Image (cartoon, rainbow, N blue to C red; front, top):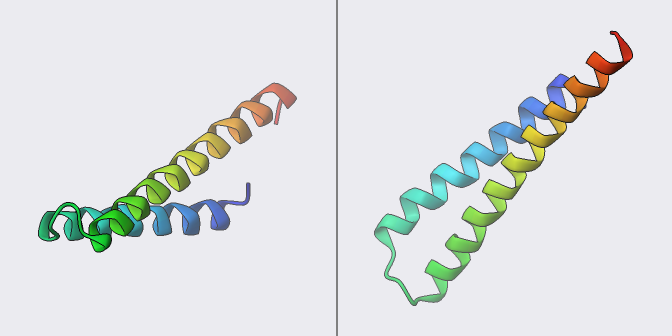
Length: 67
């Protein structure tokens, strides 16, 4: 994974997580807005997990290849 792509994806993931956490504090549970914001939080966490997994996989591959 190129560093610029990983950095951009991690930035988007952090933005999604932080924005949705702030919104979840202010929204009433059980409303449609709350459900969509919760879904956005899950997407942000999933994106962050994918970026970290891609980073670890790339480092492991580079270390194994001796580069």
